[in-house]
Length: 247
Image 1 (cartoon, rainbow, N blue to C red):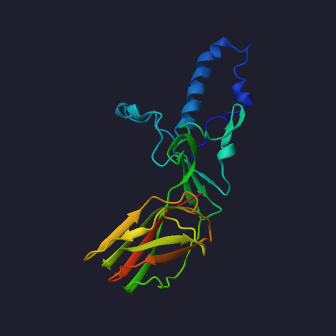
Image 2: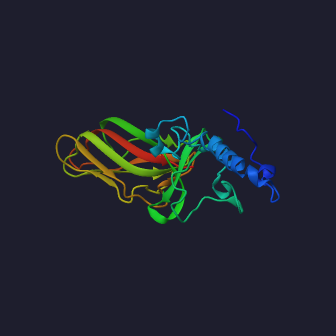
Image 3: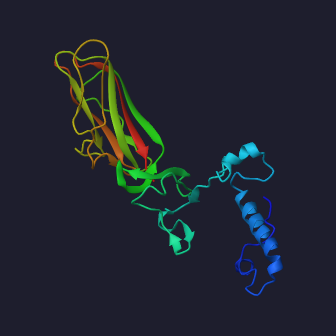
C-alpha cells in the first residue's frame, strides 16, 4: 500500500500558520487536495488516472474495500472514535444497518447489524447462518419410538419445524413435537399434525413458543411422537428443525 506524501497530524493541520506567506496559499491548497486524494484512493474510486467515463463512481467504495469488525468481543458499544470520543452503533435508527462483525473468539461466526424481531425501532446484531437438524425413522411409527437426542453446538433460535412421512397414517392424524432438553417444554406452539390419508403426508410450522425457541449452546432437542393414526400409525418419518445461529 502506497504511503501518503505527508503525515496527517496536528503539525500538518496547523499549516499554513496565520502569519504564513500568502504566496504559498496555492501550494497549500494543492497539497490539501493531494493528501485527501491519496487517502481516499486506498478504499474509494476516484483516481486521477481513471478516464472521465469512470468519474460517475468517484467516492464509492472499491470492490472488497469494506472492512468488517473482526474481534472477539461485541464491538457495538465502542465501535470507533469520533469527534466526541467513542461512538457506539445506533440501536434505534438505521444509520448503522449493514455493518458486519466476525467473532474471532467463536470461529469467526458472522453477524449483521440490522432490525431485530422486525422492529424498526430496535437494531442490533442478528445472525447470518442457518442450520438444519434432522431425525429419520424407517419403519412403522409408535408413541414409544426412541429417537436420538440432538445436541445444539451454538446459541441459536428455532425458525421452523417440519415433518413428512412416506406412508400417511389412517383413521386419525399422527402428531409430534420437539422438546427443549429433557423437559415438557414444547418448541412448536401446537403439535404438528400429519393428516390421515394415503401416500405422503407432511406438515410444518413457524408458530413457535417465544421462550422455548431460544436455544443455548449445549441445549438438547428431543423429538416426541404424541399420537399415531388410530388404524395405521404411518411410517418412514423425517423431521427437520431449522435454526438461525446467533452472536
